[in-house]
Image (tube, rainbow, N blue to C red; front, side, top):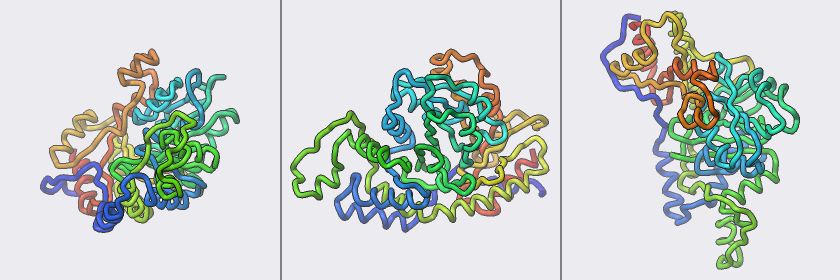
Length: 383
């Protein structure tokens, strides 16, 4: 393609925030209802409808959403929860927050998602749940996962990256007992910080709503709009303050309306990458199994044998050309706290450890131009 043109600055990720989001924020500001209220309820309803689930419960982050889901399912001390080792640390941290024991398992080297074969080896009589992660927007192989799980083991989807993603015609968030999403700015849609818990279990949804609001038997909105706003609610459970604000939800409503279009744009861009990088035998691009609708939160490659230089040197060279890259994510099993807690040797989870060393996320977001993708492809070929 002739080598890269003059250097520029291409961010690894950049949210799409426009005039519609700015205008939406004014409504709660003018109404005076800033904390959880009518906009949160509207956002929850729209998110549930789009993802084909009965209930959606807005929270402050995916991390607190995972914590909330585990608490609502009454998972705690003495229980084990199986977590893929190649994921952001919050997946395992939430298990510790409720006093349960995280059990790490390895991932598939092609999809980066939980490996059902390794998962089967980790199940014990203490296993209460598994948290498959739909990493980078690709849903885990839920049928293969279900095939190895006992019927009484709960499935909690970490769908942090997977808003709008599908698996065999069904949306992420409706594939397990409960799902949890993130709206961090590196995700396809954002509310700044924020998250969403989804479920088809009405009793579980009700328990989540109580627990996210300190354990109060009635929400602040219902109390203030009711006949006796001066009367404090009863507190039957020990809860948390995991409430999303109406300001965030106002942004989320607009962002959600953009989601399908944003994913379609990213899917086309991923196709450009895969075609343009096909001639580099040392760089493996993401796979999309049949029946999967990828959410494309990130485009994560693997730097393999025959690369012109080590992965980190490639990332440094691209940075010099104005191209931001990142490792895909980390292997929890290689982080000091978890190695010490779980008494793991370096490299204990072989595939996850390899992916930590060799994955490289390339820029993929909706503010990039067609020329940006050509520039990045040319830069990689020029190495």
